[in-house]
Image 1 (spheres, rainbow, N blue to C red):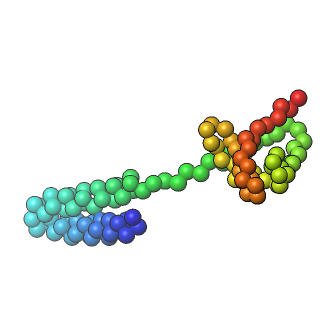
Image 2 (image 1 turned 45 degrees about the horizontal axis):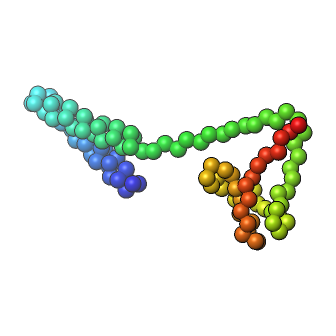
Length: 115
């Protein structure tokens, strides 16, 4: 995709340059002004197409404010008691679950009520 953008911008630069040449030469023949307009429209059309087709990266940042003291606890496998890495949580069948890397047991991750 990057090579296509470079080629597109290069072609647009050439078309704009030729458009300027034809616009300056329209002092001798007015029909060259129409050619200059077509060249300008083609160049700006290519630039518009390249800009429109470039995907934009959207970064969303969420901040969570918790109402009280926050404690972190280690999560242990209910089968073998090994510590589990919470970054390995996957959603399967609509429920968050985690698989123990030691015994292979898959357990659902639930949040206990706060009261």
